[in-house]
Image 1: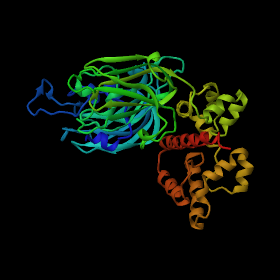
Image 2: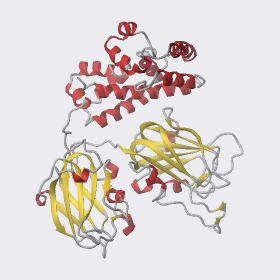
Image 3: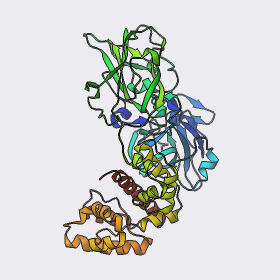
Image 4: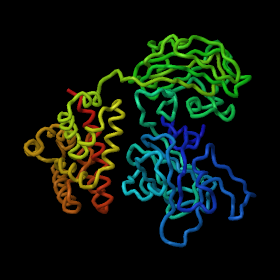
Length: 505
């Protein structure tokens, strides 16, 4: 099993060229082209291969920097989404890898060009400066899980990186009234689980385009019993089916004898043992398959068209399927949540509710105008996108709506009224703290405000007073610009938590 599957088994690869990712620009790729960064497959090495410029390397490599500065590459994600983990792979780069790297993210128009992106000032931290090992898969968790459409990868100062793998949750913007492939990875679908994938990974089933060869599909080993294999796909959203396609492209002596499909309407279904639930509905009965054929079934041929949140494909008894396509339309989610609550309020009430979550008037105004939200995920993504595109003055306005950590409850109620209960609950870890810790928090807050001009902000839910104090002391040496970004990230976390509380009685 490859290292990416072991470390990020629950995530989708968002940047690979196989899902439409592209390297838009690089400061320098003298020795090896920037496009190699997103190639499918592990980097290869031929000790005897050279070019006119030097050793042929399977990766991105800049020349040796003899001036100040650092090299960078701008990547457009094939699938916009929440970035959770990264693999900065320096395979085969031994005496020429960068000693350090870092990554930034941004939310931008998919068609934005590299010059526009490079000149924008609203890049945010995805991964702080980290050391890299040579010839290694360097695996990191994102410092903050945020929605990104593009990334900027830095080499500090120069060198070579074989591959960049970006792992997370797909979160593209989808319209509810258009016909789209609900099972497409690029639209946010996920292959949750499969009984077997010995010859072909489950994620291949929902990738874009037709596979180049048999290895580009989902294929199980040969079964020697009376059972069957299966795979469960979480759709891009709750939707009804218009057409189903089962494509056995390239599978000729190893395609399934028969296939069947079932659907499930349960947005909150847990991946663990989801295939064993007893509320799956028949969509396509066991149907004979043919080799190397795209089998298409219109809505009238299906036993049920949904709405569904998941599909389960069964292959009888085993074999390979290259692609599953589920053409359909999104419908409203079953369960209500904060998105439904905000959608149902008039403009003034929605603005007031949003101000409870974040104290920036401009943020609340833009969020009110952004309604309706398709679902809670869309709401959270919009909250992040609007926040990170606000001017710094609005960040400071939001910070001013927060009490000092450990502030007296009575004073808290007088100052912050309707949000006092939430703020007090978020700081519950202060209750019962040692007198010395509380005293240090008071002094730390004073020192912090004197240095940065705003209150110390931290998403305190679940943290003890000692943990809050440690974080405060750790952040005090930060330069003001960096600390402003850190505090903004904490505000984004607090906002998401408070949005979730909107529909809580």
